[in-house]
Amino acid sequence: MSLPKPSHYHLIVEHLSRPEFQDTPSPATKQLATLLGKGARLPITAANPRAEIAERMGYLNPIPWATIWLRNAGIKPNPEESCFVVEPVQMVASMNNIAMRPLPSPLNEVQIAELIAVLNPILTSDVAQIQHINGQCLLRIPHRLKIITIPLDEARHRDLRDCLPSGEDSGWVRRVMTECQMVLHDLSAFPALAETGVNGVWFWGNTQGAFHQNIQSESPLFSIQLRTSDPWLAALLHLTNKPSHEAPIGIWHGSTQTSDFHDLLTNKIKELWSGQLQKLSISLWQDTEPGYICHLKRHHLLRFWSRPVKIDG
Image 1 (tube, rainbow, N blue to C red):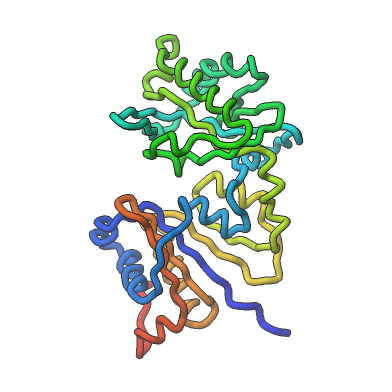
Image 2 (image 1 turned 90 degrees about the vertical axis):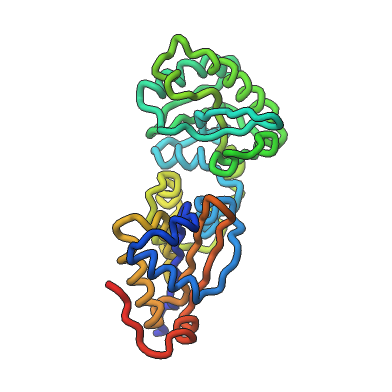
């Protein structure tokens, strides 16, 4: 019986700017800095860490995140239903464009209830409704729409004209977002919501129609070992993780400041050195400049380390 192929592991480190990376004296970042000098470096092409992880899990954009959230909550969407994530945002106008940014802190239960009370009267005329499901507001529409949307992570701080929904039925979504923005300018009757600074909403998540085109079952089966604190990725993992006879795909997603990052990095270096790990990839997502990805293989260690090297930890 042949042994299983060595597995791959991918570390995705979010928002690691150069000053933070150089000034943080933790053992994990020191060890990471040593490794990055040995690997092959390439620019990151994915739009954000969530999109890159979803791609590695067997999905291609556009991903129907809103439908995935419904299914993870145990709700089976109607085959003709469309669903969007409703994201409260702050619209920021400049001389030449309008951009937006997420709220400084998530809405609490009272503020979410007020947001739904403000917006639902606009939507009932179109037989649509906003529901609060597992901490997230979702817009459910009882008919199928052909629309492609851009997630908030990719649209924030950009000119909104470049990020608006597209597709055959995109005019409906654009009109509704505009009407919601108009009513959110007067929140005198909703003091809890007014103190958040929300003055607009962003719809994203695509529609039910995209789900059948990108479902993972049409791709080879994967066994994903994903460690993440992102609830959307956890929902995707819960729905798509499938057994496989191949070596599992390991993905870690987060920050170097977490307590378990150093132990994980040390273990993966040991596996790489002993041949149990075929490749270790590290994606650095930076705030100040485009991120990059480093691919590290065992021959990189052999090339630079001519004698045994003690691994901290």
